[in-house]
Length: 470
Image (cartoon, rainbow, N blue to C red; front, side, top):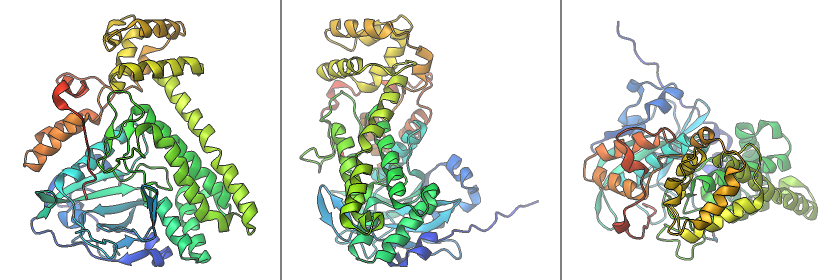
């Protein structure tokens, strides 16, 4: 007997609560839509079956009955410069499902598009799919890619490229820039409604207490950035409109994973000053949170001076929150049962930086050293004497090798493999992409046939540069 899938219903809480920040809009037509990749596990979490995952839904061209797609308004500091009106220039919020946003990228121009065409290419959308899939598998809070659909449209960048739309899922798309936009209107009621909406969705324990709400965002972001640092993730474009209130990673543009250890690592072609370098990420996160605090000041206290005092006290908690999360993460990576002393961590950082050791490979081979096989780790250093001295101190703490293998990945989206997979996919061959997704979706378990996915880039790969994909 045929069983018909129930009609999909999307709620529209954001659009209902904050109409001043939601512009009703429709996706552009997709001439020849074709599903490229879909995360069926995520679909099942959302209660969606295969029949409901139509290309009309995933491109926004045929939204469910009753849905009210909107382009969201927000402001933001981009590379330190304030833009009062950014918004979803090439994206639409279709609505909410199972308490989470269903959102599109590359669905066409909106009133926020400025000079852009509102479209996206296959390569950058698949990049977001694989990197967000990897971060989710690593246990790092992130927006998640549901599907990438080719549109059949050719778009113009430096060259002509096949177009695509990404459908992604998030706890919400509320950003620091959302609050900057509301604050700039001088509409205190709008600012309060936005904060109440965010509290209801993400931090219900802070209901009626806006300082507690800000505290919660500070703690969430400190934990998130620590997790980025622990796996060598470089976001690449930490503008305030790319920082969520929920504490999820969002907007995978020029992102990449650090290979040779260097705090100054920058991959983004547009980050010429290194503002968003790997080592700068904690400081930039705190700077962004200061901009959120400025936006929330009228809700903290009627007296400006007292509001600032409360904001500063909360913001100063970022550092301790980050240090606690990072130290706990390093304790786990080193297989220890108690927090390591600071000299042990500092000396390791100095060793890795001086030798430009591959970050991911080092920590994975270190578990072999904990089992008595020190040669794989020693081989990463041209002069292993410094490592030998450090390892003697570390081994005296009786590290747990099995515990290390549970937190130090074998597989990450290696930059050369990402580029290889995206180039092949752009040319019509998705097999390398699927193999890469398979590897990074189970990052801790070493598996036969995937050895190349655990290896650093070959010497002839050269300096790596990423692009925003807009």
